[in-house]
Image 1: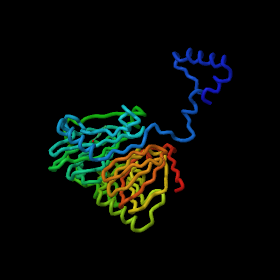
Image 2: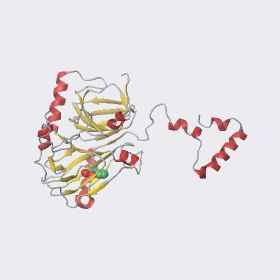
Image 3: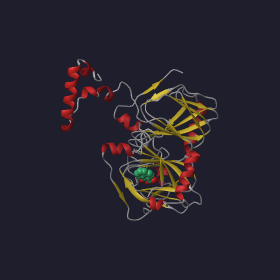
Image 4: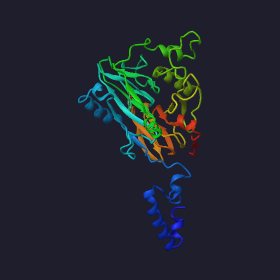
Length: 355
Ligand code: 1HN
């Protein structure tokens, strides 16, 4: 398709190019020159695989912490920008990732926006995210959600820095041109519920019966805290009970208890467990995915290229890049991706490749 028309005769080619030049100021362009790049037979991601080792990123973040407060910054975050998407603030074309630092005594002021967010704790203990005035007190490797348009502020009453990974759908919301945001006039939301209330109400396969005015959280999104201690126990129980899937290892998805679906409308999150010495067969999928190493060490092979994996390292694997994981010790990974949005749009595909 590319340029075939213009190659038929030199004269016709010249006429076509002259026509394009005449049309351009009218914002009209020939589809036949770009069709094959627009409608590709398989995804061609603009992003590239990349690993951020934790230690240097942490050092830069702590240096920023000495120079700007969380309140001044509103959010003191280093963006993990895909090296192939400069200026985009995107880790893959649809998603954002950042590392956030809250120092002892600091508050990140209360706001809300149409972007939805997850936090995955990397370091520290005792800081909280308050969602609509209910605190989730966080420990390493807890998952905390701030669904779209819910008020949220963070605070660190502990005596150590707290660092977490932020995952948001910022580029998706930007694509739809649907960003709204507002700040609360006070730094912190008034406490509306005791810390941990929604985890106790909705995190145990129970819910208050309706008609009792006891449903305090939005009905479609009742749970926002998935503690490491709980998810790890489930993942290890699965690992003890059955053989690993050849392409995934042991894998578990975080679900929204209201509907059994992904944790947020645009973002899905899941876990992997690989026994020591296990290597997966290659698999590719259309969801651009950010991985965090929670436990152990090993190697990720992305389209055959090796990326070492150590605790707290971050790795991005763009759409349709074949991934194999190799565990040196027992390897546990957290991951989030745009699979939730893609499933709704009928776009999600995965392919299991032979070892
Ligand atoms: C945000 O609200 C947070 O609440 C973190 O911690 C990062 C990046 C862009 C837009 C909003 C937070 C963010 C953000």
